[in-house]
Image: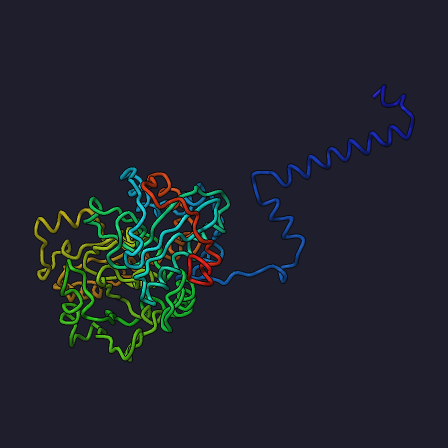
Length: 454
């Protein structure tokens, strides 16, 4: 201090001001760069009144306020995604674990095939199949590309450059992204499941985007506890849409429930493409305690919509795995000692165990698997009626995974797409000719549907 006192007065003032400024700067830097983000949040909170801040729609489950999907960030890093949704990425990790493969282009005329490039976090469309002559295929293809573009646009980290193929049909091309894979063909076919187009939108009057359906479901269930739901099994569908593994799947369901007072099932009466007289709006299905899920020619896109309900999903063992099907924890009905259960032969059981290796107890399960021919369905419903607490628990755990923990949310979907891109880029090795062109910018393709302009 002796040196400071001998300096002229104005220099002492200037020195003191500089010292105070430095201290102030350190405080500000500590305030903003503190690893605890609450300080920054507090600062922004103080700058505006409660009335001026955006409000997220509330989401209540059984009277509890839980994190709504709108509150779940689309901008998570890879590390944050793995922490927030640790069980989501099993299909990707399994695919990466199969190792590297030669990724050839084409054939470009494979039904509904689209080939694209990701470069510098941008999306380019290289080719689309000239046999994509179905309006439905075009919508499904474009939904997936919109989802990829959204995942790129919301990524807080650079994603690796890569090339990929996507096939939005029931029997997709090998080495491509798909809406579902047959678990028994994992060794033969390298299919990588992606989120269903319904996450973007199922563009029919009675469905729409998954997040909009959740809003309607939440409104219904906010005043309809499980105990007060319709005590019946619900199903509507087209009997002829069956997987090759169970060609009487839907017909047997209709036969097992016909005339039963515990079931509300029926064949859809189609009047035009995607129009039927007796269709039930997807959210209205959640008014039932029990929902039957049936696969179609391969998968059925209704599964993620059923998972929005606090209802018990009942189905034969699922063959075709969508990107989130592995989150199901099944209780096998034939383990409950029902006389009507048809035991699967050893060959069938070995195949089943590839997809569903674990048995879950009634207090762990979030769905019920019945015999492939539905023979034990009635006993299953009676057992659930006799054990209402178990039924409620199964329904609640299912909803907890899909909705409360956000595994079907947009935030989780963005995480999945980005992890898919990372995983695919590690093992898909572009091979052969045909990869020289950059591709057509997605933004222009989205408007024109063409990969070139003339």
